[in-house]
Image (cartoon, rainbow, N blue to C red; front, side, top):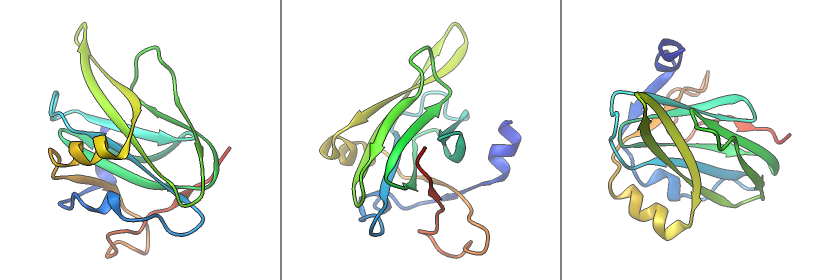
Length: 148
């Protein structure tokens, strides 16, 4: 699984991209991992079961979400998926807190407000992307995850 995730990832230095508005009619969702606990561990992020990216060390990942219901998951403890009702033209910020429990890594997801997210971004200098076929040369190219 990790090899598959790593094969589809590209690293880019650009901490300001998440603050840009989403294209009209969709939401932008960003998962922020400001701490470097278990820096070499890749933590996949899924929206409605679809792989949208991953974090590794102090990094973040963003994607576009169609309006409606979304279940966002990462390697997690017993809290289950983070539920989002995406609104058009909105931005959502999720803090991914990575912890080690009994030797296993867990990523707990919690929504944060924009000022908190922007403060976290000051400690992050790496964005993790999944490439979008046919748009590899465009920094902001990303597929839109449909709602449930």
